[in-house]
Length: 130
Image (cartoon, rainbow, N blue to C red):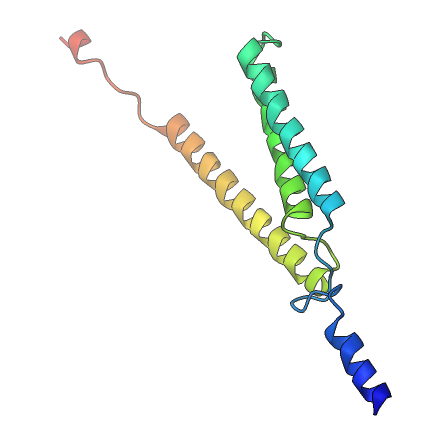
């Protein structure tokens, strides 16, 4: 009888597993790494914009966009715990599908707007008419 009660105690005391997907939650170390990366990835673009360290605004904007994309990945990995192991990879597959759909929608919208702008009839200047 003592063996059975000991087995129940060890099963009930096991806090290392996540009941939702089988993966363990992040540790304090991983949260601190994620926080540190987030601070750096926020401070660098802020510094670039506020100091004007790079005179070309297009390059500055490109750097800010790249660092923003990296920060999205950092948040997904360190805070949302999205990886290929959680929930047998379905969370990552859902994220990839969502990103692909958003890219298709944005690219298609920009393509349509560009072609509408190029192919519009020119506006006639009424002051030049006889």
